[in-house]
Length: 89
Image (tube, rainbow, N blue to C red; front, side, top):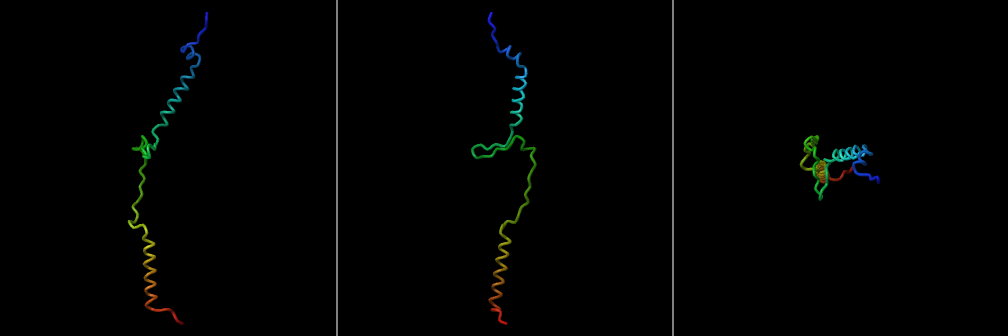
């Protein structure tokens, strides 16, 4: 009489193996739905409808308005100094 271990007897010997495999599969399914980069294109997650909307208010159309104002003031100052001449005490 030879003793052979079959698949059924192996399952009975390790009942926790099925539970471990099922929990591993469940963890794998739970981690899906993340944002993915495929071929240089960023694809949304499966939960993009529930994501918070980020709002960025519109800024000035001309981004260098402070620099332009500074240059304008400098030109005005230079024009005034040319008309009045150099300061002589």
